[in-house]
Each structure stands twice: as structure tokens, then as C-alpha cells.
Picture 1 (cartoon, rainbow, N blue to C red):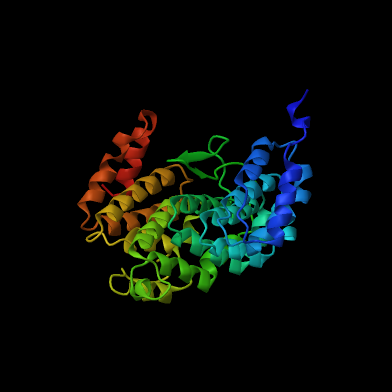
Picture 2 (tube, rainbow, N blue to C red; picture 1 turned 45 degrees about the vertical axis):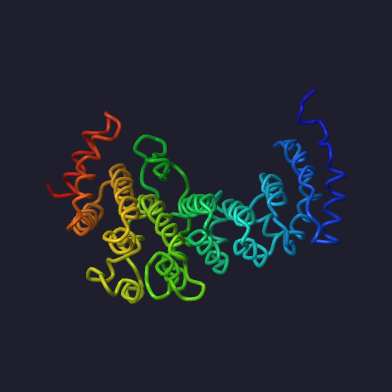
Length: 368
């Protein structure tokens, strides 16, 4: 017998328990009921249970005051085959924002799993781009959540969304995608997006200012609601982690800004010139990290440059790219012997078949 045709046992008991939680959200969940059902779910037997269980889970989560981990875990499993637009029919924008703002990491991860569904198609990414309140809440949680798993999930979701929505597709060099240090970049045959998510992140003043604010050290950090020292370190690390992938997708978008005044606000003490060529890439690479005071973040910055340069080597050549990289590296290497040594040694730490090409590329952008 096909195991997928075997009925899921324990559903009636779980269903009754959900009814009880709806009646009294102060009740603790019976974890075994959730676990027993979740462990039996497969691609084949999940769809019939979605209309039965998911609406109840959604309603409970809106008002639940206990740890929602077991509820969120089951909800993520049930949502597997559900599309982004189908989820929006069941959960309001307010419910998603509430989950993103929850102190419970399981609720954050559930909301991010839903947003991740919008990366399945350019059309869904465009729908999400119109929900600026959700985008703002997502980016805030991604950068400020103290839990590593929430940050890692947010980094992947943001990269996937901007990949799906990228409105340019370079010709594939080998018929497939490429990755460096686990970061996929979209050099492959897939339809271009509409660019609406890129415009939301990089051309919406409030959203763009949010990224600069959460990643920078300044008066806002110690203000009420500001990030702690640990949260700031995490936020900066997450921006460093995602930026090589975003720069590989659309270098021009991350190299320029519509809001030079915002850069001046957050970088007034040590900005290098400002102007329209000082985009988020320059903020992250040149201005965000205090290299003198924070050794750990300086090491993370070196790792960023290694990933950034390695990815840029395999993106299509352009005069704009090479000019941008030369200027960025010139500014970054000024007085930074640790970074210079790491960049010169980078080809020795890559796979042998790519070492020579990477060495030539590094020497070209370092103008040696």
C-alpha cells in the first residue's frame, strides 16, 4: 500500500484541541498532539488537512499568549503547498506584521516562511512589494532579532525575493546558476521580474532609511527602541552577509542612492564624499563598521570583501562594474593592511581551477 494514502492518525484529537485553544487561548498546547500529526504529514496527505486545521491555527496565533512554537511549526508544514496569494486570503497583513513583531522567534520564522513564498514568482514578489508595512516589519525583524536562526532566514528570504524580482537577467555563462560561500546568484535562464521589490527597498525613503539606521552606530542606537550593542553587531553582520549577493544581482542598484542626505545623517563623522555614487554597498563596505574599535566586525568585513570579490569575478564584465570595484577597493584598502593581505591571499584559498582567474581579477581591481 502507498503510505501516502494512509490516513493521518490523531487529527480528530488535534482538531478538538484547537477548538479548545480557540475558546481559551490561555491554555497550554499539548505538544504531543501537534508533533504526532506533523510527523505524519507528506506532500500527498497534507492538502486535505489545510482547510480543516490552518484557519484555526491562524485564529489562535492572533491572540495566543503562550509560547507558539508547536503551533507555528505545524503551520509551516501545512503551508508547504500553499501559494503566497492563497496565504493572503487566510491571513491579513496585520496578522503577518503581528507575527513579524512577535518576541517569539517561531512566529518570526512562520511569517518569513510565508514571505518566502512570494519569491516563487515575479508576480508574487510584486504583490509583496506593494505591502510596504510588511516589508518594513520584515526588514526590522531581520536586522534586529537576537536569534541567529531568524537572521539567517531573513537573509535568505530577502536575497530570494530580490532575485525573483530582478528586472535584468545576464546571459548564463554555463547554463546554470553560480554560488560562492553558499550564496546563489541568478546567472541562469529565468524570466526577469518587475523590479518593484528593488524599488521598494532602494527607492522608498522610509525603507532605505530603516536599513541605514539599523546598521549604523549613532544617537539612535541608545534611544528608546534602539538596538543594543549585541543587536547592532548582528544587524551589521546580516547586512554584510546579504550584500555580496545583492551586488551580484544588480550592482548599479546597490551602488547609487536617491537619498544622499540620509547617508550624510548616518555617516556625518566619516563619510567619504557622499553624492549619488554612495549607495548601500558603499555604506556597508566603507562606513558601517568601526574597524578601530570592533575587531570582530573588522574580521566580518574582510569576509564580506572576499565573498563580494569572488562573486563579482563571475558576473558579466562591464566598464561600470570594473570602475565601481576599483574605486571601492581603493577606498576600502586605505590604511587597512589586514584587508589588503586577505585580498592578495584570497586566490590561494580558493579551488585550484579558479585560482589563477581570481588572482588576475584581484590584481586588476586592486590596480596592481
